[in-house]
Image (tube, rainbow, N blue to C red):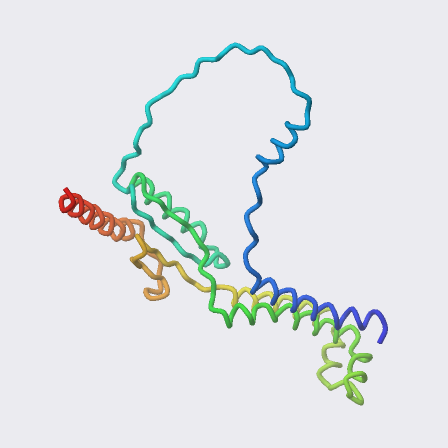
Length: 230
C-alpha cells in the first residue's frame, strides 16, 4: 500500500478517533491568572525608589441594586445550529427591560447522544467515499474484491460531480443530526415554555407574562418567609 492509499485510509480513521476522544474528554480547566507571573516579574526587577505624595481617594457608599427581577434567573436553552440565537437574544433583552435585575442565561441545547455520535461519523463516510472515487481501482483489490462493483464505475464516470454531491449531502446530514430544534425557557429552574412540546416559538408578550407569574410567586414566597422568620 503506497503513501496515497495510506493517507486515504488513515485520515478518516484519525478524524473519527479524534472526534470520539474530544466528545468524551472533560472540559479544559480554567487558565491560571497572571497575578503570580506579574508578581514574580516584579520581584526580579531591581527596586525603584520613588517619592510619591499620598493621593486622596474618594469613597462612595455602596448602593444596593434593586429591581423587580432581582434574585430570579431565567435560562433560555436553544439550538445554536438552528440559527435561534437571534431570537434568544431578543427575548433576553426584552426580559431584562421588563424585569430589571433579572439574570438571563443563554445556553446551547444539544441533540441526543445517538444523533451526536452519528454526526461524528459523517466526515469519516465523506472522506471514505471520496477516497474510493479517487483510488477505488487500487482499494477494492486490496479489500478482496476481484473487480470494483458496478456503482463505482457510475460514480467514477462523473468523478468531480460525485465528490461534490458526497460533500454537500454529508454536510446536510451532519447539520440535521446536530440540530435539536429546541427553545426551552426555564425560570428559577422551572420550565415555563418548551418549543419541543408546543412546536412553536413563544411570543414576547406571552413569555413576559409567563416569567412575570413566576417572578411574582417568588416575591410572595420571599415575603412569607420574611414574615415567618421575623
